[in-house]
Amino acid sequence: MKTFKYFAFIFLIAIIGTAIYIAVQPNEFSFSRSRVMKAPAPVIFKKINDFENWQVFSPWIERHPNTEITYGTKHFGVGATYNWHGAVLGEGSIKTVAANENQFMSQHMSTLKPYESESEIHWDLEPTDEGTKVTWSIEGEQSFMAKMYATFTGSVETHMGPDFERGLFKLDSIVTADMKVYSITVNGITDHGGGYYLYNSASCKIDEVESKMQDMLPKVKAYALKNNITMAGSPFIHYITWDAENNAAIISCCVPTTDRVITTDSDILTGQLLPFKAIKTTLKGNYSHLKEAWATAMKYIPEHGFELEDNGPMLEVYTTDSATLPNPADWVTELYIAIKQTPPTE
Image (cartoon, rainbow, N blue to C red; front, side, top):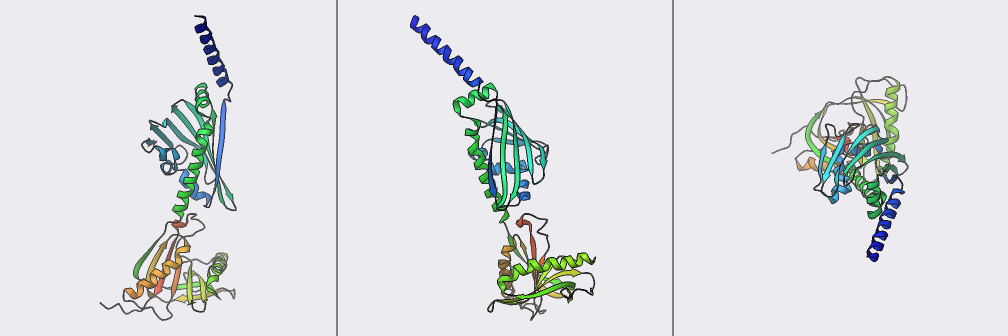
């Protein structure tokens, strides 16, 4: 009997000691994980701001795909809600409570099962020389039940830290893949209306064309803006000569105008394109795919019985402004290659 009382006393002491140990554990927790992603902040923010995107980068849903996910009346922006219910993940919800577009987002998370808890989630996006530093952090209070759970199974950071790292890795991979999406479509024969345009020209090596364009085109656009000249469409590049054998090119960087303009700058001239028939090809995606787009268009012409117009225009028209569209997958470029008027024979 004495032995039983002794073990009972020891057991009671152990319970009390454990309770005291749990009680004196920190009442709050916080941790964060960061990753630098080679993507503009707006592209990343658009992905995390919409709860409907969360399933594709959530490490928890990746492991437990049968978890039930529901949304509130709003699934993106401030006021959006995300709810989960599953045998393993328990039950809870997240609500976006504050955001500064492309910079940060704050959310409140409530967990009902396996235990009740309240916590705050923060996303911070910081531009760096290597890309965008994305920091995903969480902080909250720990109830006695939460501290007991952590005592026997590991801290919140021990459990969730690797998940945050996995989530950022998946987010990075998905954003990178989204930015690489592109398509090339040969639209076929069309009538180009021609028109007046401002331009400057340069001859250079083929591998210098891109850098030349980046320097020349802004100067034409700036001239038009400074002199209140109405632009009548999208800027374009006119390829005058492309001599791959000798690695030489002559290009004009152009801005269409409504009328002939008498310029006051010897480097900015006025030109005119007469209407012409062309094969139109559309690239949607990064400019790095333009070489493939040109090759596709040039292959299409003889295969469909058309002939290039001797010394005819070859235009690269930038119908979207890359400065206002951070995701290269949204950029649209149209190619126009002049062909002879005679229709192809059957």
